[in-house]
Length: 148
Image 1 (cartoon, rainbow, N blue to C red):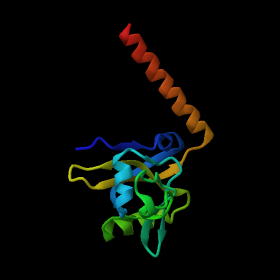
Image 2: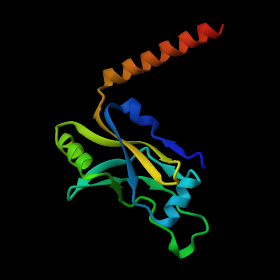
Image 3: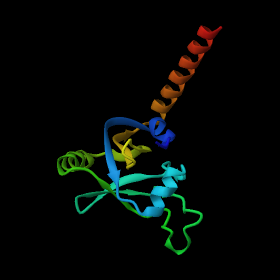
């Protein structure tokens, strides 16, 4: 199958991840073809509720080269597909102060369906970001010393 695994690298640096969920996405034909060509960007995307339905906003899926007039809008709102129990659980936690829903990665499962991994998260403070940079540097130094 295809090796599509588009990650949101900024998410782990900017947020504390609380819970993860995997959701389907309602896509058009040209959108799934663009995703299979690894032509998507998650960096500015976020999720929000509209009439108790979960939507992803600012997910950029590039236009398909040879689509002609049938091409899609790159940053349109897309509906996420979860069962009602998960949606109710996510919505109740989303209403708490400081909780956001961010996409972590976009991938295609073994059945050929596009899936997105979303997470309930809380924003990091500046000192938390410094701490994560420090931890990353320490891990890198340990790995270098083990190699030598």
